Image (cartoon, rainbow, N blue to C red; front, side, top):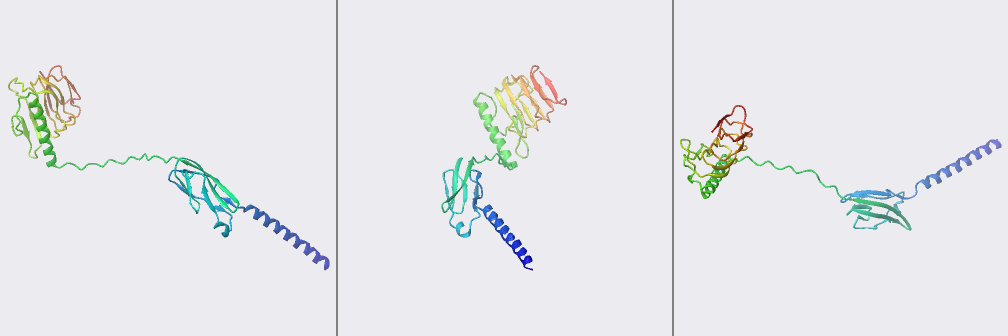
Length: 262
């Protein structure tokens, strides 16, 4: 009986010793340490650091500091905020012990997302009609100042025709029954008249270039006996007839366009 009790005492002692060893090992594995020894942030970003495995009393006495506040700042609770590109050392002091984290701050990423351009509201019929009037008035005044013998009355049907909505549909500075030269010169740009159906400039020998790009309504173009060498009609899908010189190069005309050469 005594022998059995002696054996039990030995086993119990061994268990207590083993428990003590395990407890010491567990205690050694839980030494205080900072939550991150290295940290990378971009300018403007923040991250909270902490010191692990501290008692509640010790946690209340942690003092935080930064070696470069212009690069990275840290508040009393361990929140690190990146301020500018560079490297800083953030330190947590607990009593006499110090725990550090190397903080690397890189430049903030540029926003490459393009803000979509808002689609402008469609113009009203009144606005379009007003623009046609203003554009024609400016063109006529320029041509007259340059020596053209044309009417400044925008309602003169010999030269200008308008539809019911007040849009310019015909610009006729030509006399098809004679070789009368109205003295129109230079580049004639009518691309702003988006309802124009007929443009006649025949016999104005001073005209050197005509711009009709984008006029989807244009059906008739007369530039015979002018000095126009090339005309681009690739953006005039409804064009039906062109009258031009024999040596005028017509670009982009469809096979259905009738081309009369003088």
